[in-house]
Length: 185
Picture 1 (tube, one colour):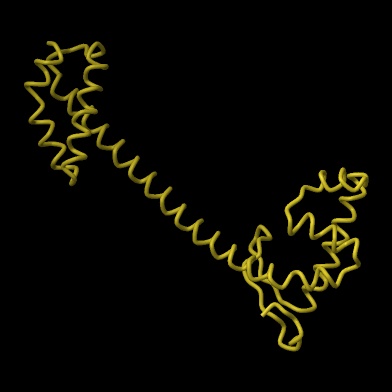
Picture 2 (cartoon, rainbow, N blue to C red):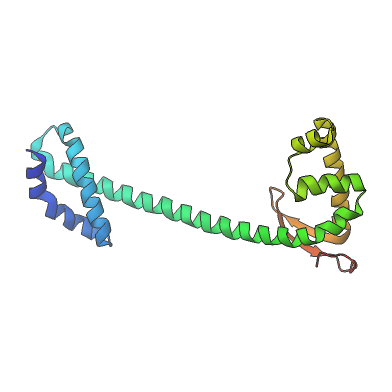
């Protein structure tokens, strides 16, 4: 038997089987085409032509299973993207609000620490580039950055209470009630 004979004999039965298992007619047509392609490629592996019908319907069953698996993976991926976008938007909003009050804190630090944190944390310059630009050893700069961050952290903690997730990402902040002079509200 060749592919044309097989297809003319079983196409309508396969399509009916697909309609019973798949709601969308466009998906049925796509899957029917997939079954045709798989049948064409796997026909040489068919050892007993008397079992062609069960062989074809096994291909159809596997194609339907693959279809639903793909849909589930796509749905999970879409849900994941929606959740991460929501999370990123919320995090960006919090960081935007905090960045507005960060300047007074940075300016309250000694001038060298303020310049260092402005370049690295605000302007996004890499520590390596900053070290090269200022002529400071990279290892020394890393220590200075840690010290400056610690000083800034102490100023922030004196003014605000922070909530972080398990990875240490900032989730929310609240100005402390007794610190009305803070600019984080």
